[in-house]
Image (tube, rainbow, N blue to C red; front, side, top):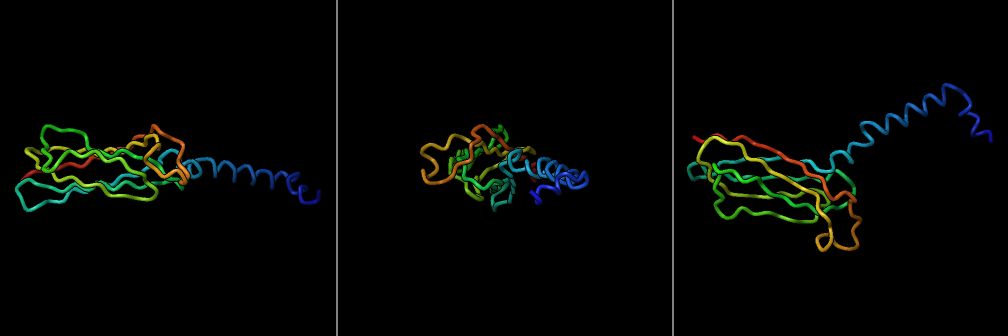
Length: 144
């Protein structure tokens, strides 16, 4: 009973409430609001107006999740190998690649979407419960 007496003091109770509020917003909720982070890098290749696009997708939560990673179609962009759409189990971070040729100055948008994990992530992994989150990253591409 003596250990609970500290909560009867107004100052201690106020500190406890402030701590709870601090943990709730924005830091305690940050991972739930942004389970993914994206970083897009566009690097020139040897060919004229050819680029390698790297989209790094980082998992911000402590649980694996199934993600579908792609780029948004753009009439100024031609995919040199294929317009690949990747689906994988993301537990920490992964990089996804595309080789493109650009005809005009444009912007390329990469997209990562959390999808249902059945048959994608191993059954023994702890899976992130959200299955309808989308994050995007956009990079401007200037042709020479």
